[in-house]
Length: 609
Image 1 (cartoon, one colour):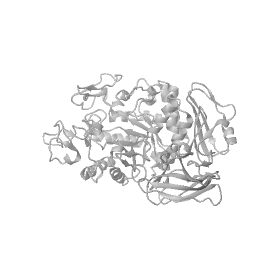
Image 2: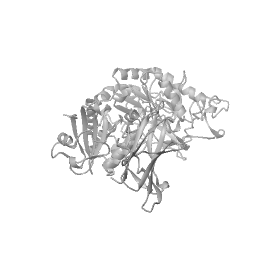
Image 3: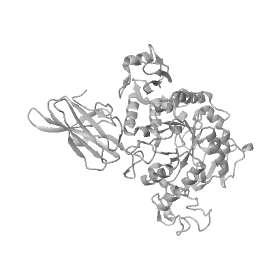
């Protein structure tokens, strides 16, 4: 330990660990073993506010401390320490102690502009979710690519100017025009009846929840270009068939989360009506007096308008417009209609594009119903995300219950393919654990693949052994696992559209399927995995995931290397305190225990036997 030392992950230096409720205290302590130090100052500020400069007390010891009261409301607070010296020549100077990266042990620097601050997340309330969600295992379905339940595979209401594949084994592709825009969308014909027919498959796998990509009327196969929020896309089926699907899923204890795409709509929607399909005088593009005109931002009417990421097919909605807000979450709005159908929650597409006030309005709507969940698509650390120049409020209370855990996918791939050191993974996730309120951390919607990413098996170079490791990380980390349809069947594919193939019902890779099923079963058989504490253990080559409570534990070691690795208890390290002694850990693991290449080693039982 250096002469000056602080570690935000150890409660002897910062207590409590992690995020803090507003109007609660956090105890900060910093150790100083340097006779030339005359004092330490804590400098802390809520984001955007004037910093507080507080002289810490030592009471004649080598440890300076101060209990800070978080009474400026929810938000992200940043802090560092000023260490004051009086050298042998009686000259005064100041050095600065801050973070190295994220949290944990920090470092002294000589100049103010070298400081990296620590973070404390202060939140308003715990985001408690229903038991069905927290204990669930989800499955993401891209509806067009899952299954067609019609007799003889008949496609419901084929759309004009599209093509339908002749064989489910065909590779998906786009037909683009000379400008690079998609001129012909492709469809396989998956529908609600198909999902209903495959409920036994989902139950056998162990699925308890479905996240559906958009189901509302649209021109494309992905339906992120909404044409009508109040209508089911007829190629999927009817409202009656959707209601029947929901009823059947609920009878089988499977919940449903819908995709809410409220940042933009389709150019050919009822709201914009670029091509006039809804009438020559309807929609914002064709009538400046349309009720929908204020929903959009025109630079020069009608052809120059703001669109999502510059994609002209996706006109961007002005989410600050009160009428649009009421249309989405008002008494007779979009959410009201589909919530009354019995959907169990919503995932907000591109949450970065939605103002905090808009998200809060959606959350208020859902809070009027029992046991509904609101999740958001956020790819980074959601606690300190800045979007459009504004620090976001996603996880500070009364907004999102949780966010998609893309950091898990990123770190899993780094660990399994790039030789990323287990210690690096541990540091990354301990930082995330520190920054998120506990309930939000456990509400994370975990993924190792989605419709926006390359297939996980492709990124693992087709190594099914490593795919099993990825499934293990998905199901063991805090949060709710979500399997992207077909990953468990061995589907491969690069970027869109290759990652959206039709499900290979006649060619399921049993090795992949059984690996996924076994991890789901381990999670279900051990409640400590979805509600217990979380700690990462590591050696130079192995990563261990420990889930535990006062009685039970599950400990899994992952070996991504190409050689067998011995589990040497003496080499095992942690970034936060191990809840048991090394002697007890040695008893649990046993003597001469090894982990085969690209395999895992699982231990479970009573923590204190």
